[in-house]
Figure (cartoon, rainbow, N blue to C red):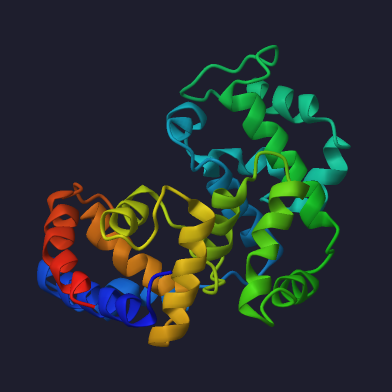
Length: 262
C-alpha cells in the first residue's frame, strides 16, 4: 500500500510543477472545479447528457449536446421521462426527424453510439424524475458523503441504475455537477499513477480511491486533486489549447526519484 507521505509529496510537487509550466496562478485554473455547482434539475440533466457522451469517439457521432435541448424539453428530466414513456425508440425517432447529427442514426444497430446514447438519455431522465425536486436530489447525493468508504457507493449505484452510465462516467458527471468529493481519473491521471507506482495496474476504481485519500491528506477536495494532475497530464490549460503531453512525461521523470526516496 502506498504511504500517506508519498501521496502528499506527489500532490505538492504536482501543484508546484503546474504553477511553473502553466505560467499562471494555479488557483485561477482550479476556480471552476472548486466553485461551480449545479442549481437545478435542468442543469443536472444537461450535465448528465454531456458526461454520457464523454466516451472515445462518441462526440464526433453525437455532435453538440445542446442541439438536443428541444427534444429533451430544455433538459427537463421529468418532462422527458413523461413524454417518451420509457420508449427509447420514440426519443430516437424525434431526434432523427428533427436533427442532423454528424454521425449516422440507425435504430437497428443496437451497439451503435446513437442507440446507446438515446437509451442512456431516457434511462437518466427516468432515474432523475424520481427525485421530483433539486432539493431531493441534493439530499440523495449528500447521503453518500457521510463517510469516505460510502462515497464510491453513489457512482456504483448509478452504474447499476442508469443505462450506459458506468462507474467512470458517473464520477465524471458528479464532478461536473460540482460535487467535489468525486474525481474522475482519466487516462492522463492513471498514467501518472501507474508510472509513479501509486497504483499497480490500470484500475479506475482504485485510482478513484487514491484521489479521495490524497484529498483527505492534503485538505483538498478529490476533484481538485484530480484536476491538478489532469492539467499536467493533458497539458491543456484553457479550452481550445493544444495538448502538450510532454509535460506529463517531464513530471513523471522529475517526481519518480523524489517518491522513490520515501
